[in-house]
Amino acid sequence: MIFSSKKTELPPKQDNGWKSSSEEETPREWESAAAATPGRTDNRSVKNEVTILTAETEFKGTLAFNGDLQLHGKLEGSIEADNGLLTIGEAAMVKAEIHGQDVVVYGKVQGNIVAQGRLELRGRAQVYGDVRAGKFLIEEGALFVGRSENLNTRTEEKPDFSQMFTKLSSEPVKTAAVKAAA
Image (tube, rainbow, N blue to C red; front, side):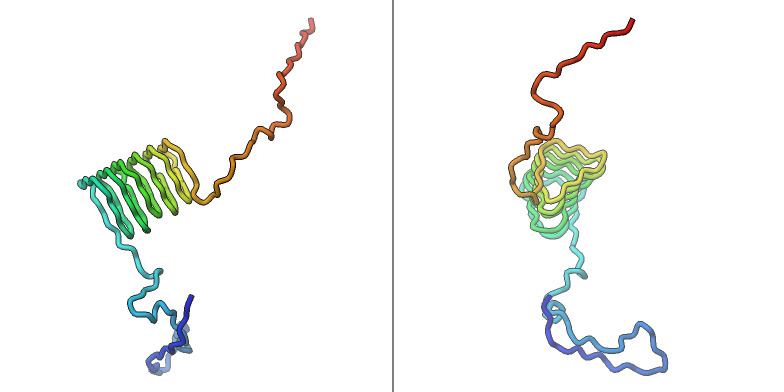
């Protein structure tokens, strides 16, 4: 974090004989550079604007956006999101290649999904396609048909687990005949 040395002056306190325990005894000496710079805001205090495409919406083509988007209608094409959250609602039907930061699916998607952050399949979601995500959650009741790949793991050779079987060998198993006592 960057700080500036600008001193903040508070208005003089009026002494009415009462002091609250929450009153600051000394003024703040430092302000963050973000608060001191005009046109900049603190990210924690700013809420993302949410765009909503209702169930009556049908769209064909490329949809690109910043911020948060809730899609409840039908879309065919591609979705490109640099940041924010894409929520595909329960009534939504999407046939698209999706690239975004965070994606939450409640509806139906046919196509590949790349989520740099997280991908969640919730409720009765149905996804038919390959997914690549930093984190991937499939809630009970959701359906996923395809392949998945974790974006956070390095491409390494797949381990050979066949060596873990020490009691089983490649030789045929000999069965012992058990004689019944008469």
